[in-house]
Length: 216
Image 1 (cartoon, helix red, strand yellow):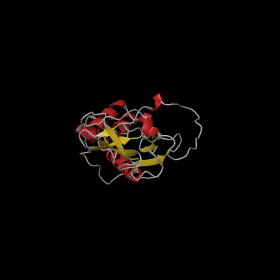
Image 2 (cartoon, rainbow, N blue to C red):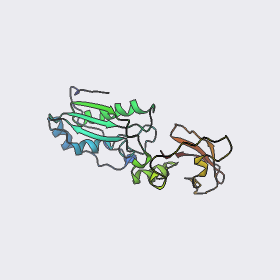
Image 3 (cartoon, one colour):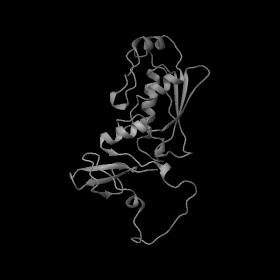
């Protein structure tokens, strides 16, 4: 749990929305001045503010677009905000930084106290990534995950097999196209990329490496 209290003087030039994160309109100067004078923070405004908070590992996506912000609650006093966050996986090293960025952004927007709580169930799914964010991820050079809706759902049996007897699930998926040249002549170099949620691939056509965000 991370908390933060009002700074002595609210910065009248609150952080503008980052273009790379999805084109959320800048908060106008007049609105910031009104909030500095004591206007209560609304739920809609809180969601808009968090759309300007970039994911540390994929900075072209916001934490909202990534689907890790599950709920925002405004207290009766209209000054305390509780944000529920589901990390992409337990132990994700970016979790603490994300919480700090959320606290900072909402405090700058007028919240007196911000509480960030983790919710681990239901577990985060790549299906929670917004469609527009998937396209932006691809243009950034990361192949977005396949939709889980196309995969089997429900209880799945565990299968224990001898090494080398079958190809692993990722090799059985449809062929990945290179995000740079669109060639389907690609190969996996490592099951893990720069983070545990991504795998490292290489395009045989253009010889460029790229990452694939594994479906969860």
